[in-house]
Image (cartoon, rainbow, N blue to C red; front, side, top):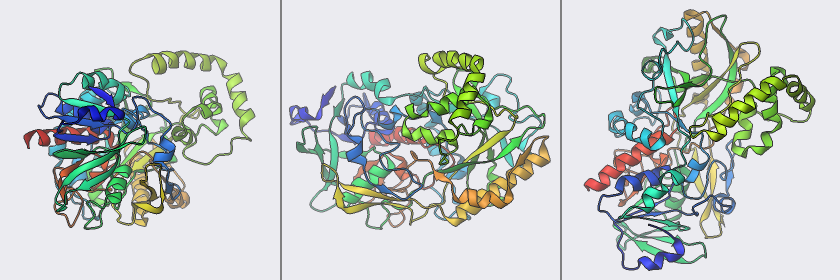
Amino acid sequence: MLIPGSQLASLAGASPDVVIVGAGAAGITLACELDGSGLNVWLLEAGGEKQDGRLTDTYAGVANPPHADPTQYRRIGLGGTTSIWGGRCVPYDPIDFEPREHIPGSGWPISHDEVAQHYPKALEYCDAGAFAFTARESIAKAPETIAGFDGRGVVQTDIIERYSLPTNFGSRYRERLIGSKNVTVVTDARCVALNSTADQAAIASITVVDASGTRRDIEAARFVLATGGIEVARLLLASNIGNQSDHVGRWYQCHFENTFGRLIPNGAATQFAFERTHEGVYCRRKLLFTAEAQRQHRLLNTAFRLHFPDYSDARHGSSVMSMIFLAKSILIKEYQTILQHNANVTFAGTRWQHIRNVLFGLPSLIKFVYDMVFKRFLAERKLPYTLVANADGSYPLEFNCEQTPNADSRISLIPDSHDTHGVPRVKVEWQLPEADIDAACRAFRLLRETVSAGSAARLEFDDAALRQRMAHCVPLGGHHIGTARMAATAADGVVDGHCAVFERPNLFIASSAVFPTSSHANPTLTIVAMAVRLAGHLKRS
């Protein structure tokens, strides 16, 4: 069943067993897993069935550059941010769950296996195929990523990342949820407060505001916050819950990224373009350091990909890239800077060079447009994004990297600034520690050394500019991690191994907010896997 928040009164007398706050990837997965369980489940979404304009007021806040404004990379409406995600699906690695001596604050209170067993189901929800993340097991007659380069025991060269349709969880699972006999979806029902029992031992109710501004308190046996890492911290802080040990909002991590140097194949064949797995899923290659290399060289978990040239630099000579750059204003703001390697490039001065590229390359542009119509717009499984190789045969190197958990990198509330519903706005203070910059520099140098010693290709970059470039990395704006970290004890975190808040054990969190560390991987697949795991716990308990 699906109803708007204004009709909550029609459910008077109903006693939900579980109330889920937030209908994004985590909340919808959790609701689907509880479908047919016999539990009375309510799934609350702050927005409507479609994305709407409430984003600006609800998520407005402040952030220190280069972190994106808090309104970016977030959406309100059924499906949440899956309405704009790129679909990249990557699992966490076993080393990500281990305490690592060179990374303070690392180590999860649960094992990799406890999460990994749920990746196959998570991949089903994401429409991303099998739990197989090597080219050898996923692609027929898979060639080497760089011909002749086996990684020398330092670099994993056979790793792929899979791509979803990309799946909008709102539209994909809407009918299933509407048809459920025990799940009720309530739109336009924003949670603005968590209310404790008189003895402060549990959550008694939550306060919900509908589209007209009417407030209601909803009581239930158990509650789940399935909002993003910023909003989880915001609700907990605003309600003064879970922060007895001063961890809520702290330990905030994004992945930091940049594009630097260039790989020159020197005749070695490389796998740059998208490939298709046995099931027809788009995938791409990447290079990772082995767990042993990470420990030996004190590295953060780091991924490298062969990248396309800077779209804004007309010297690439590509009619396709120039046309995309000229038309970049039609893209959503979150994706515009990707075209220019996250740099602030002045558009005016290069316009006529780009126009010249377009005019002289019309035949290839026409073919590209034809392909895009069928592969990107008409196909159910869409080509994830455009890849155009550099005219000189070299590849800029894109990397993204985990962060060391840092208590001073945090989400906090602005005391005298509130949104329409009276919820304090957030202040984002993202930090990139010096130790992380040093680790990124070591990673680049180790990769250069390993590639040069083990293949015909070589990696070139300016050593003198390396550290400055790493110091100016940007955070991946949609990856909000660690603000309600999981720990073995209440002294060390916010939630336990089952994602229950230590201070209020009938309140659970389904979000990347609970991840103690961030890996190199996009968090969505692990968020979904953790939601599947939480559903099992709720059904058993």
